[in-house]
Image (cartoon, rainbow, N blue to C red; front, top):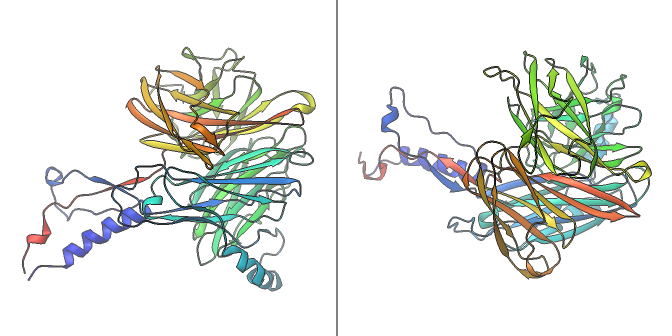
Length: 517
């Protein structure tokens, strides 16, 4: 008779990795590294995405696009499904008495119509390689909670694009829907009087999550008790106006969201009286060197905001990676970031007519202090200004995808901060029809290549762009989407980190199927 306990252990670890993307199978004490076998990469079999409530304007129109690249199933036996469903309607979190029994009861009561609406998908993806779309209108549109399984899970992505033509918060607001997590950093938020920035928290699970929001300004922590212990009900979202969490107005604020229990999707909706609004997504994890790709060529103003979450100050050298190479901007050579304090620097029109990317590196070799960072980018002048945000982002890795590209208005930025690299860019079939096309790009070391991306033949509807690293060093990417509304070039920028479509699973040290009792 064969032993089943060891087999079950390995099978469980493989299943966990394939579903969640996280698993570890440790060797017994005393095991030799030389005996360990090479790990195997397997496709994930389940992916979750969360799209925040689109906004607060009755004038808003929101388009949703979901997409899974072809060829990512890895032989998955299940056909799978991928749907974005409405959450319960978002509530604005109270910053007064969160323990009020009546408020809790009101939040727990969900009307039958809301529950019925949540059961009907806003977007339902049927097959890899072809985007699926959906729409929503008005200020009452809730957050969306999505799950993809089987062959639709590896590389599944969703884009939420909202157009607000006029009024408070006007703009083109774009966000790649986020995966749930427990820790998020948002540099470039603000509590200034001209700003109205909300943190949106969405809970995908069947039990309530509890989150804390910490704020850090130029002088350190902005003390507040009301940012602690914020309850996010199961399957629901809440939004928090960050200026209500502190009495101090600051132009540059770093928002830190963590959860005590559960997990959430988090994003900041930043709105300015003069420049409109857009989504600020989380910065990549703190690192000594960070890359912020995709500054438009015609940027009229660029502001850098950085934060050092550790106990050490950070001295950062600033590099602009342009078409022909890396340069140090005159007058903006370095940025000093004190521990637990937010630092900002106005880089003005740093690109000067040439698209580029920013890289922050340690000023001294061997003294790399981890930081998070983001850019506030403005195009236009006067009453025709429009804003977007670019957070530091991880490399494309094996593959990254962004959805909701149109026949006009898309620009793809590819940056090789270290060694030269080659990538393949594939334009998918259109949501309404069209034939996919691919093109290869070579990016020289230390440069940014900004291109009008390939477009599917006979395009109908919107399409997705997938970037795959073919050779060379790491590549960072971003997509800029532009739409002219009432004479204003409204725009939004989405960074493109690795889609985490596969996960590394450790191999067994020996074939346990041949072991007998």
